[in-house]
Length: 391
Ligand SMILES: Cc1cc2nc3c(=O)[nH]c(=O)nc-3n(C[C@H](O)[C@H](O)[C@H](O)COP(=O)(O)OP(=O)(O)OC[C@H]3O[C@@H](n4cnc5c(N)ncnc54)[C@H](O)[C@@H]3O)c2cc1C
Image (cartoon, rainbow, N blue to C red):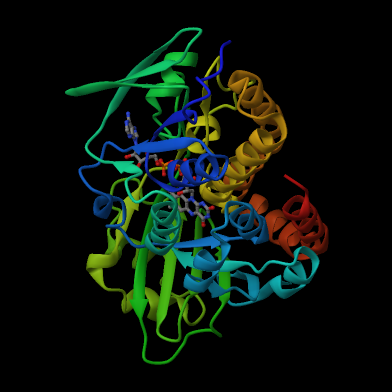
């Protein structure tokens, strides 16, 4: 494969302008590659339209540190101190101290609104190249040869570059071209989330609680003194998935559950379906690679999807630092080889956790509660180990 002429730096097309795409462009820019992001949305404001709390474990901050975006991200987050498991009737099954994880990894665990994470990455990229993002650009495929890669866009001119990163999410066009359409794997339940503003905090700020019921799992996140962001997963409300349906599923549960749902602002409520995909055994080919959900779409049950996209970008940077830009396909394969085992493990573990969270039969739920309680230390130590593993 020939390298770009000495007179100009390599160019990259990054397809997709959410967390993965922005992080990839930051990584490439920091390696001296002229990376432009091509996003199908008409403007970046559309991607920041929906609020929603995200958990970012220390591995995310560690990745952001490699990308030079950590301070901006951490400044916008709230340090998350405790992760608690409760029964629906109000018995605490386990409590994890996330400050311990911070001591171990040197970075905090945070809760951050997804709009703030996006904005922090966008600002970091804009500082490197104020003209790095092209919106209203839907990529429909690519062609490549020995000299470069050509990205095709709906209703717009082709773009020629030296490499292409498909960071276009769950239904990635780039992935589909390389690996075929594949299948989206559904989950058995529905997911509802919402926001509540309370006069008094329901829990200490920086606390997350999971309440385990039969066929219903409820998570509460105390993000600020006044704001609780919640999500509910259930196999029990296939048809009706509005706020009233959610509130009826947790009627009689321990305080502050009923209050949080009763005082939820209806306009904050959103319902969504969750999917993942079976892990791939290889990602890219030639000058093209995948990153984020396009490469390894996972369920949100371990809160690692966006974090894995950030880790991907960090490793892309480290691989290019190590292998250079003179043989881009070789550097991209090195990046993929380094990422495949860890991301595959998180796809599988996230699905397993999804199955546990929606158990509906009484015996299964009893065993699950014992496991959450007695197995707490085991799970916690494994989680710490996974989060601490080097990427
Ligand atoms: C309810 C929920 C809660 C979650 N909570 C967490 C959490 O707490 N922590 C965490 O780390 N992760 C969480 N995740 C996962 C996280 O949201 C995803 O893993 C993350 O958004 C993946 O980022 P991405 O950039 O790879 O893909 P996406 O976010 O899917 O972005 C892909 C981008 O590509 C664009 N695009 C698509 N096709 C094209 C095309 N053909 N041409 C141009 N542009 C295109 C899209 O418009 C989009 O902007 C959660 C997910 C859900 C659904």
